[in-house]
Image (tube, rainbow, N blue to C red; front, side, top):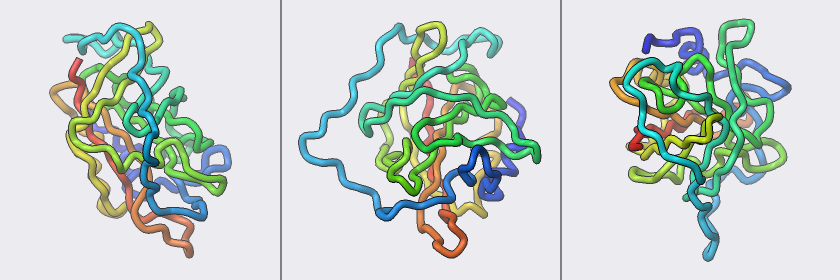
Length: 209
């Protein structure tokens, strides 16, 4: 898939566009920024129901649009909103920290290419939908349910943290030979002067069925 340069430039710049009152891919900060350990006895979410469908071999249009995201091991279960481009050409981000969003300028999850899903790590009111994203490890499973009732299953291949001025644009938005997923949030050190996190957390995953 061709590189989506307007959105890629927005990420590299730190995602400073304000959408619905939320600045960037999290420019606000709650009082406990450190990653919270998982409490003993907390059960993981079950995997979503629905037929698991392998990626198609032809056009992306054959893949239904994504409607929800489940990451059982870190307790994520969220509807997916759709995100486009803002007036300045930057990629939109969710206006609330409670849901994640799929960028419509990227392939639908399960189509060949890098599908992009973003969410906030926190807000002034507390942890966001992707607060525990850095806990994921290679081999963990991610599920995306689609509007036709099918579910695409992805497996994490790596989790990386990048300074925002070193965002790996080509790696995230560039073409791939198979169906890939990128989950993105903010992380690293929080700069109280600018109100920004200084890094992005990116989870890379490949569809397995």
